[in-house]
Length: 318
Image 1 (cartoon, rainbow, N blue to C red):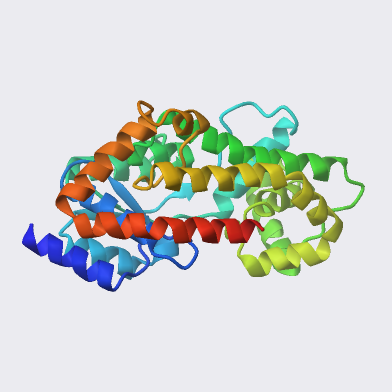
Image 2 (cartoon, rainbow, N blue to C red):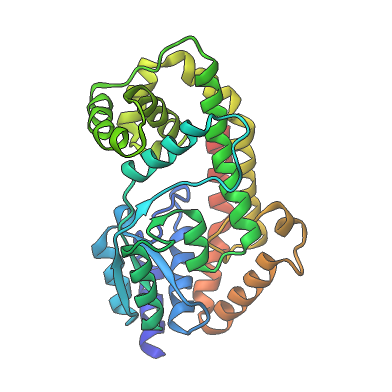
């Protein structure tokens, strides 16, 4: 225990990126990520996932080794799947968007757990034809034990942005224009997706554009800038049409930090309204109590970083 406390003190004094989530130049997310690794270490939580594509394998393994946490690498095919049947997007485009998301986004990760049988099970699921093979927010919620209500709302909100963009593209008389790099990728993808599902290159191009446009992380900022230059009118419509949805997501994230600062997931509206008995409220109470009792310096570091992180959120929105 003394060695673990030393690791925590050193991390607080000199933190580094282990969360992969931006927090306005504060270390709030990194401190919370450390807490969740400690929860795993003390068997208060089954697993924690570090996305090495964002964090880096070296930093992921560095903190795991310091805490003496068992771990293993995951090779995942990421697929963003809606939790409901789309009311506005044609069925073939929905399927094509999901396949494009699978092809375009690879999420290599490290999963930690004190129960090696749990790691082995997840490894089987991500490497085989079982349900975790195509990994998305639903699978992430299962591994991290997020409340189902929060996971469903989050997936719905993310997919809603995609629906909005798809509807705009469908109604527009403007053809989707791809930058040369993306066009080359679409030509490559068409070889597989046409043969497997019968999708045309044109449909794949639209699916790629719709999937990538709302989420810069799916393509990188350079790619997004290329899209924007080629499709200024469509991007302008996207920005206006998705503003309320994105505002709701940002506000929900900020409110979660205020009410439940020890969680890694975004709490749903129901959990945010019921701050005493909701799944998120109960989870935050357990995690904060553990942190305050076992690692008070980390508890104070997390609380101390909340206001600065929320201020950064609000600045980004203005």
